[in-house]
Image (tube, rainbow, N blue to C red):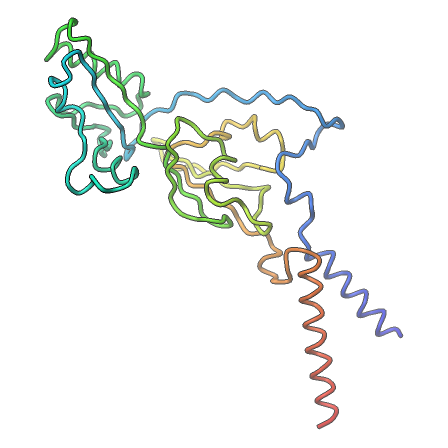
Length: 265
């Protein structure tokens, strides 16, 4: 009888320690207030400043579009049938290691640390000074060729992803990466971000609603998002109570069968 109680106690202990708590699977929990209603003021995102290896899309319009056609690449034979990602690579302007882009008829233009709005003004000013008059009505548009980031670890679709929009928050990025499975650590998601001085790791707790106040709530181009696995995954006992119980029953059945066979040899 004592042995049966011991086994039952052991089973329940394993179940309690190996199952993933429900609260660790939920996003945006209100951990600091008793009420369910809570207004969160999301921190205003600062304008992104261009970095090395960014790809810029530059388009120039004028009254006579033929005069600016050389400034508006339409792709070469290698990219005409490619997808949007490939086109952005072949047709865009990549920021080199010196922070420059090379624009037809304008030469090298330094864009490192500038916003897209500032780059638009710089190119427009250069065109008016060197090639056109005010009457040409030059209009310059500069955008990032997609919001590129990499998701690794416990996500449904790890890899490099490009979102063709101006900005995206961490939840949109995770959704595009196939979501975080139950075995992923939502309490400590790492954002590895590139700065002029090097890379810095930031930590986000996606289970806390206050993550929306974080200055890292919105991702930036070239971010690396890493989701760590929970300890329960390495234990291999199962993510839920049912899975854990099935594992324990299988192990106990194997042990019982082995003892039975050993006694009858």
